[in-house]
Length: 124
Image (cartoon, rainbow, N blue to C red; front, side):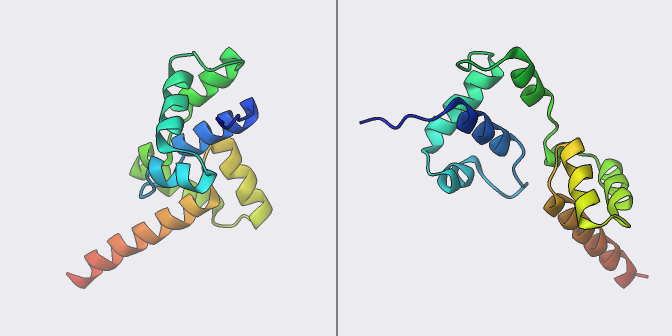
């Protein structure tokens, strides 16, 4: 018997796949959700082609316009790190939700900048 998934679950799965961490594959996202990676790929394709069952055009448009964390420029990443620097966890989470990222992206980007700067200071 085929598994049946709710519309909400499919939408969340697609969003999670599109906003995944740089090093995370779609296969890994699918595995954490307990679905096949081909199923997740099919849902992503349907969402992008506006063929997703019972999903409003606004939801699909939102998914298509969401900027993946790996698509942020270095300047945008630095601005996000700076904006979150003095925020408490609640405000940081709000900032991240508004911008379509997760707090771990801010932390990862900060560590990447630190590593870059540490590498440059070794040569000085």
